[in-house]
Amino acid sequence: MDPSGIIGIIGVVGQILAASVKLGLDWKEAPADTKSFIGELEGLSKVLSETLNNVIKNPDFAAAFQGKHSSVMSSDSALLSTSQKELDDLLGKIRKGGDGRRFGWDRMKAAFLNERTQTAVENLQRRCNMLNSMVAIDNIALSANTNLEVRSTRRELAEDRVSDQKRRILDWISSSANFEAQQADNIERRQAGTGQWLLDSQQFRDWITKDRQTLFCPGMPGAGKTMVASIIIERLQQEYRDDKSIGLAYVFYNFRRQHEQSPRDILASLLSQLYRGHVADCKYVEDTYKNHDNGKGPLSTKEIVALIQEISSSFAKVYMVIDALDECQPNNGHRHDLLTAILDLQNTCNVSFLATSRHIPDIERYFEGCSTIEIQATDSDVGECLDGHMSRLPSFVQKSSPLQEEIKTSIVQVVKGMFLLAKLQLESLTGKRSPKAVRAASVKLSTSSGAYDKAYDEAMDRIQGQPEDQGNLARDALSWIVCSRGPLRTIEFQHALAIEQGTEELDEDNIPAIEDIVSVCAGLVTVDEESAIIRLVHYTT
Image (tube, rainbow, N blue to C red):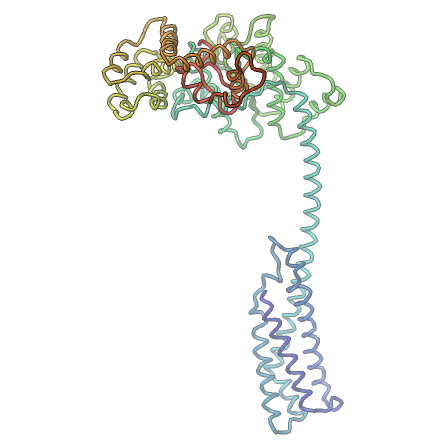
């Protein structure tokens, strides 16, 4: 409410009282009903003054209703405007009557008790009552809001305590096998439309909609199995983003991380992902944590499997995706233990399981009778991939759409659905100096069973043909990546290459740029941006 309306009323009442005094009338002679009227005006003026100072103009009151509805503050100033007009008329009559003429109590009474004046004062009284009611309503609302805020604060504190405990439990459960960064990197590299054929297939639709389904996705090396796995994971994340009754856990096996991808590590990662996505209390997980001296004792593989079973049964459905099962070592029964644990879950829980792998009989026997989709990139997928890498070719290629189409057609025909081979074949054209040279090289692209070997040999020939410093940098880089016991982060990789024989300190001026390293390696290495790991473009390299 605009305070000017109340201020106006208070001002008019004050002027009426002052005008009465100025007339010099003896208060003792005033009629009783006139005294009552003036007293009523004074009382209403005080009510309005208190409302103005303690509520409407009080900054603490306004602050308390910041962002909230207030009945008083939102009421219309027109509420008082009619009463003010009638009181203004009354004041005018009093002043006019006192202009050199006798203005006794009888005439004052007539002015005060005029029907219009009486109606105006009665309306003012009703509106003062309304203001008082609004103040009372606001106080009740403020009390309710305060109570709500207190409860909300208590709930947030309780949730913080739960969150803190959940973080401690996750730290206790989880191994070093974290796959979120790799998933983000894979999706970042995806060309639009890649893998849509699989998402549209009946086998995949059955897997995603029916209960307790197993889908096996084998493929040749370099066929894009890992990218397909990431596309499926992304689809599940999008499909069930707001559905907390659905669980999702996934794994990317990596032959260079075998030391941290034992069956226990992988199962612990699956458990961690499911527990992280579980919104309700998991008493069985929390009890197990307490039984291990609040996380001071390690979980056994058997306990992890039991917890996965418990938490999976609390979801309406769980999806599990494991990529590159062929990179899970068969030694010591690791592969058998992992597959047995996951497939056994389907006996008691609504778990749908999808795995990718090379064609290995020992793996395929676990999926006999299950739905199978062969992973082999379509010509369209390969074409999209080549479009995404065409910028690596000389400028005369980039300026000629017909030449780009010729290159795509030649490569698509020979790679037989293998992304990696398509990239290597495209890379083999980067050093050509004319359209004629590009066309001649495209005709000679290998279609034999040894196409990968030939592509790798040609890549090494390109490395050898570079200026000496660039060739040496490429050989050193490949040696470090191939011989390292685990994945190399870009910063440690750069530092390793910067070290010179006979030096005792790192010379920062000798650190090569990652972009330059990747460039001289002829397409054989790549960098995972999310995890900042430099690696061979494929494990077959």
